[in-house]
Length: 385
Image (cartoon, rainbow, N blue to C red; front, top):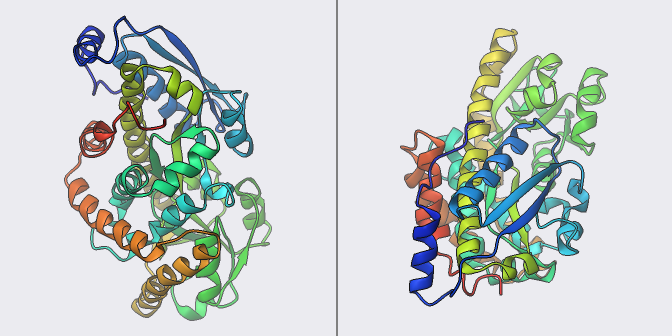
C-alpha cells in the first residue's frame, strides 16, 4: 500500500512549536514502540498499520518509531490484556469481543446501525461512522474514555467495515425467503436482526464460515463485501442481497498503552494522533475500494446481486429504529447510563459526518477530515492522563 504523504511538516518545526509553548525544553527522546496486530502479515489491515507506523515516524521526525508485529506478540483475544500489561505498546481492539470491559464503547459501536436510518450514500456510511465514533468517544463519552483507562489503554482512533450484506447459497429477497434461513451472525446486532426477521442466527467463527456455507450448515453469512475474498466466500455463495441487514463492525483501531502514552512528550503524542488519522482513513478507504472490487469480481463469477423487496426493506428499517430504543434498555442493565442522550448525540454526529464525507475522493482527503474535525482538537497535555 502506498504510504500517505498527508503530514509533511518537518520535525524541527514541530519541536520548535511545542518548545515555544513551554511544553518541552529539550528535543524529544527517541522511542521505539511495538504495535501488535491480530491480522497476519500481508493482510489489508496489516498494510494499513504499516502505513500508520510510517506516518508516526515521519510526523515525529524519527523521534518516535513503530515496529509492527503481525499475529505474533498478540492475537485479537489477547489484545486488551497484552497492551494493558505492556507486552506491546499499541494494538487494535475489537471491542465487541470484550463486552464487560467496554460497555459504553460497545453501546456506541452497536449504533452503527443508525447508518440504515440516516440519509446518504450507503457505501460511504463507514467513512461517516468512523468520524462520528471518534468524535463521540473522545469528546462526548467520558465513560468510554474511562473504561479504556481502566485497562491502561488510551483510545486514539476508530474504524468500521463497509455495510454488511447477506451472502447466501440461495436467493433471499422477501420475508418468506428469510423465514427459517440459517445465517451466520457476526455480533449482537445481527443476531437480534436475524431473529426479528424470522431467520435463525448461527454463531460460528469467521474462519469456519466458508466450510459451513459449502456444506450447507448455514444458508447465508452476514458479512461485508470485503470478506468475499478475504475468506473466499466468493467461491461458494451464489446470491448476495446488498441492502440487508446493514450496519458495520467497528473497532478501536490504534489503542496505546497508557504508560507509553504518558511517557511521550506532547509532540510524540501528537505524532501518534496524526498517524491515527491516516490509519483510520486508509482502513476505511481500503475496505471501500476492496468492497467495490469484490462486487465486480463476484458479478464476473456469475454471482447474483439483488436488493430485498420494498416490503422486507421497510420491515428491516422499522425494526432497526425500534432496536435503537431497545439498545438503551439493554445497555442500561450493563451499567451504561444516559443511553437516550448518547444515541441522540451519535445520530446527530452521523448526520454531520454524512455531509462531511459526501465529496471525499481519496484516503488523503478523509485523513484531512479526521485530523481537522477530531484528532487535532484533542488536548494531548491532558487526554489520557
